[in-house]
Length: 324
Image (cartoon, rainbow, N blue to C red):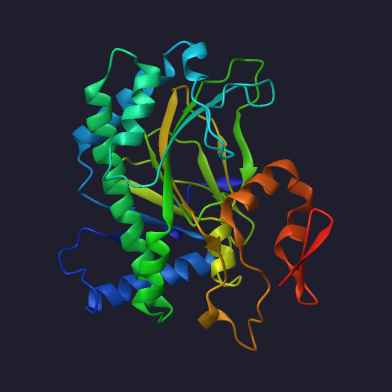
């Protein structure tokens, strides 16, 4: 069952000029974020830095990208799971997705390389626009993480260390309108493998999140709102204080649906924050390589708990024990 109770997801304004570290506004925002993540694993962010013009430009470029021949789009491959191109399939006939991964959004090289594959004659407008958009979303991600660390009273150096080891992927999504004989499921219920996922939409409904109560609610698709979802890595980082947010796409409107997401990963180890381990919250997870986890989840989804959970000081990985 779903409803339109978007107000159950709190909103944080990151462009408030009084939102500065150490200020009352900063403290209030950090506590609001912590409460939202521990309750339902998600919150909205308002940011005027992404202008209406930029929003429309990004979506127009994504539409242009999706309109390229299938053979062209399939040229984008990646050694990292979930980072390449996904075409429509019989299991997901409405869904198509493209990914652009990069370590440093200030460096335009990765986006330029991607554009050169898609448009061999060049596409400067694509590179400039997507690079600017990615930078602004990365700024949101980093501010949100600083708020989160402060919410738990953690030292700044721990946050700096995480940010320094973070890599990103920008992914575009397109959902077709279902035909009369087609199911309206755009994408099945799932959690992401990220720390945070930031989703930005084209004002067409379809995205739903599952609340702690078990109720599915529709997300407000307003272009002025960015939805932050907690992923599996944040659940492990927080030692289960935060639960990764389950979400899905149900295509309800007779309009094509476009959205863009920024996904954050760790180039080093995902590990539980030591300060978040105590008698009430004993450590449950061993540190591990983020991309190794993603690969395992893709290949052995039903066995993922055996990858993550500690047992008698050791961790089971694909049938083999690893030392703690």
